[in-house]
Length: 243
Image (tube, rainbow, N blue to C red):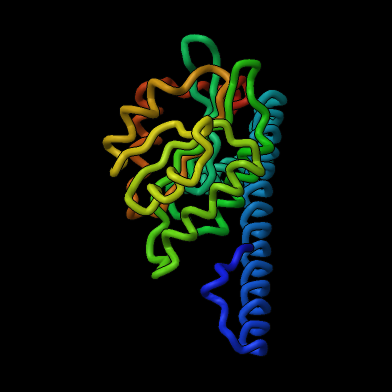
């Protein structure tokens, strides 16, 4: 947390109150980020458990019993419901010529706390031997007069979580682009359509790519473009689930 000297009030009591308020706001943001991160991890873990259980039931032909068949059907519905919300952190494995890459679709919404949480998840993601952790970030909208500062401040989370490359989209994210170390700049464009042409050829096997932005920043088309360019890889567990 940094405060510009010329922004501090001259009255000592007022200055103290400002610092306390800033500290409380920081603690609240950290709490929101932690909660969002925990929710994303819990959702991913639940999806994997459901996939495993469904595949196991299918292998053992439990569906021959009407009662067990109903249980299997309920599990499949629960899995479909968890996976049906695009843009909320769904992991998508895509196949490139040299191997696989993981796409994390966070394109539904974004605010400072949720972006920091998503960067933390990306930072802990396992990459391949030649892989990189790549963030593709669109504008966080409706942040008011502090919007540029909040975008610029994400540079600390990028460095702290060892994100290799960041692609920035939109006029607000231009502030982050300028704040990033030069070796972490992947690309910048004013809109997602223009950024798409930079992101697609940059992806390689072993990468983990997280796409995130407010809904109005239109980051979902980049996710769809990646899926069009690179076929979705189906695991053996998924194949078992699909019959």
